[in-house]
Image 1 (cartoon, rainbow, N blue to C red):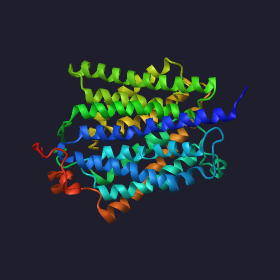
Image 2: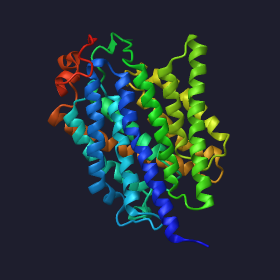
Image 3: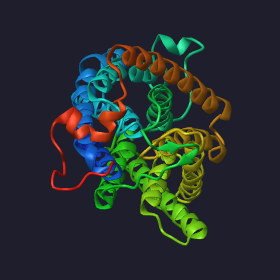
Image 4: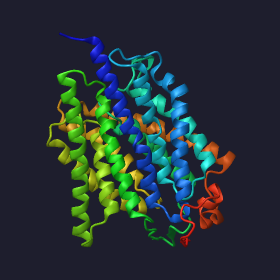
Length: 391
């Protein structure tokens, strides 16, 4: 016999637990970026990640959520739990951007952009993709499958990052007379911790997007999503490890972990639709794409310290499109329309907003500030004051 009250409680508890896992991605991004940047910029990276969580959460909770969802309220769980889950997602878009322009982006203008992203740009994409309102009767409406945001979150953040890179340019000394200067990661253990925290958070990211846990069907769907999510991460890491050894006879942990993250991004669109074997293909191809596009973006002089364009933009697009090839009931044209529409809106809107912010506040730290390190110039506090800083 059905018990609506018990179902409500179970679904609410499930959503709160999934939300907490998603919040674990906040220290995940922070540790990943702190491990990849130079020691003179670690405090500023941690400050930016903290600021993003605070500003994006508040902006989305009090403005962006209502813009995106209107009067919608789920009937099978607490509306407060649903709000918390959606709020936990909000900052991830800007985390993608902050990592890609780290070591030269100033805190204040990035904070202003965080608020605008959380109250308008990201909620508008949600309106297009995930809600039922007046836009559903227009050409703008999107009828495609994206369970947990391969496009709605990851490629959105990637397009916004690309617009930021065009405005802010590379770090000083990264590209010298057409040659690429390698800037090594400063703390591999922190990088590894951050990547695995993100991996853990992804189980709430994808599993929680099912939205229910109180029936046998929904519990199986959540379990399948989490299993498939993990499999894609594993195969992404494995494919990059294989390519790394094949090409260099070395195992590059930074690239291997990015391969895992690429697999996690790519599977987010269709984790609920795949069987247990299809994520192997999704993750493997995602890892290959990470390896290729990290080099490709470097060739184009897009300075990306964390590989965010390759992980999030490329695999966000790929993950959305491959659903149509693996699941016959999904329309490729619908998936492609969503990729193009989200890409066009997110790139153009982000570019305009960042262009104006840059004119008013100067988004990029100057050469002297970059040489000194943003820890001193922006925070007045070094993460490793006893260490000699590399310029």
